[in-house]
Image 1 (cartoon, helix red, strand yellow):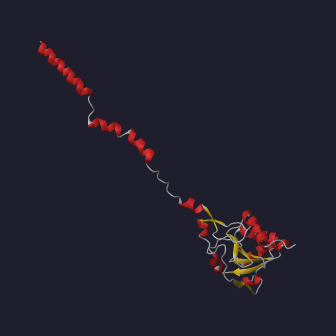
Image 2 (image 1 turned 30 degrees about the vertical axis):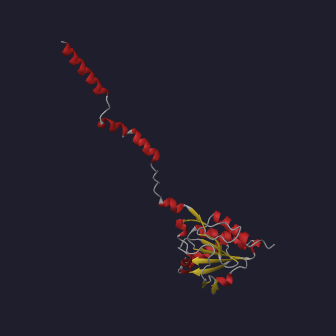
Image 3 (image 1 turned 180 degrees about the vertical axis):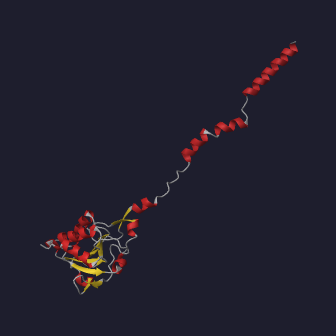
Length: 232
């Protein structure tokens, strides 16, 4: 009886020691590999950069590389817009020689102004071209402050009747050259119209825009004010 009781007590003690001992490696692995591991990962792993968005990159503005004159607004173009331009600030336009709308032959070099020259490439289709013709005539050609500025229109394609109608409606009296096949414009960039260039006295591009808007109008006047101070 005593031996039976002693044996029973020994079994109970041994059983208790077995249950309170260290857990098996299998039981240990699961809890340690879960939450603590994920927390460590989130705290120490480098963040993965978001993939680049081509559309966002294309829309990101960039300044023209070579601003030339103080007071002239910077030319800001998206990457996509810059791809439409073969010439930029500080470059020279090609040696333009084309037929004049009213007859004869015209050379840009002979038509340039002493202080600045506006070269407007346009076509009778977009409304922006018609607006540009009227604004430039009113803001510059009819403005006594800009006597040292000359304006040259370059008509790209277009039917003669439509061209003449737009010129008369805008009361545009400045010289118009005819780029019938668009080859002259192609030397400057792709055919986005209207396209406005302002040349400084050295005949280099001081500012330009490949569309026409109220912003274009304001920046054009600011450019002329910097290049051609009032002569009154």
